[in-house]
Structures are given as C-alpha cells and as structure tokens.
Image (cartoon, rainbow, N blue to C red; front, side, top):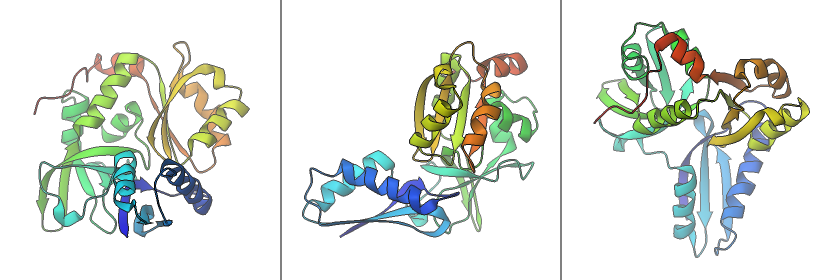
Length: 259
C-alpha cells in the first residue's frame, strides 16, 4: 500500500463534492493500471492524502506524484529546497506573506523585502499594493525556495517556477484572472453564464482549485471580476495586469534572477 500527501488542497464550500471530483480525476488517470483500491481523503489543513493498493501501486503512485506533486516531510526540507505551498491570509501582515507548505507545520514567511527585490526591483511598495499588482489571493499556489530554518521559524523567497510563471504572463501581455476555490468546470460555467467566455483566450491550471484565466487583448480583467465573481461563490479572484505593472513600475520582472 502506498500513501501520499499530494501538493493539493481542498477548501471552501462543498468540500466533499470537490474531493469526489478530484478522486474521479485521479482514478481516470490510473485506469490502465492494476489497482485494487484508491482512497482519497482530506487531512489536516485541507491537504489531500491518497492511498493506493494493488499490483501496480508503485507505478500508480509515481504517476500521481508526477501530476499533482508530493508534499515533503517537513523534516526532509532544508535551506535551498523548493517546496509547493498555498498562500495564507495574504495582506493580513504588513511585513510579508505566509505560505502553507506542510500539514501541521509552521508556515513559510516570505518577507516583504524579498518580494520587493524579486517583483518590484527593490522599489518600496507596500505589501497590499504588491499583492494587488500580482494578483495574489488566498490559496494561490506558489513555489517557494527555503532560505532559513530556525527554531520555530521558516523563511523563504519566491521560487524560480513562480517567477518564471509571472515572466510568461508578462510576455503574453494579457490580463489574467487568478481564481482560487473553484474547479475548471466551475470556472468555465461561470464564464459561460456571465456571457464572458468569448472574452477569454485560455485557462491555465495552477492547482485543482486554482486557475489563471487569460483575457483577450482588448479585455480588462478588472471589468470581468464583478460579472464572473458572483457566479463563483466562495472563490477568491485576483487580477494580474501587465499594463498596470508597466504603468506603475516600468515593466519590471522580465527575467528570473540568477542562482
């Protein structure tokens, strides 16, 4: 039997329904393997644990890890490692953001000075302005590079994968709705029912319950929020706007930092 904590979280309204959808998605990806049982459950902090039993359980576990990621045991993490986590109450504290990266562990703190260095070229923008500009909302998945681990404290910085994601978004020069707390089916339905599906050119999956919706070139993301948002109860929506960033910061974040 193989037991894995995935790099996925289930939260918000209708958690059991969302968990069942994820379970069906996982089962569909393993249908060609010899599996006797597959159990998917929500554990502490909303993290998802999968239990696989059967002749091909090792191969199945590897496929699941490849698609969804695996949460490392906190004792196996050290400075320099990159971990996947989810934003926790962004904007609550003025000195940085916290990212939940392991069930029951202390969250990683990304200090404000680190965000300023990596996102604003060192300009002294307040945290809430940075969150607003980069569309960072509750439960947004981020890759974090661990920089320091002390007694009761863990600090980090935005990981390369996250910085490269923002670079891709900047290069596309399209407004992006960052939506968390909704499945892809929910997002598509909300766009269709609000009559804005025609204003979207693509949707990028960030996690099972997190998606980046790319607007057409002549569509402002901020204008879609009040139309789409009410059709996604319990979801959080942020807007990443390259034109807004360029206007305020001169188009910084054009390439990931070295190292």
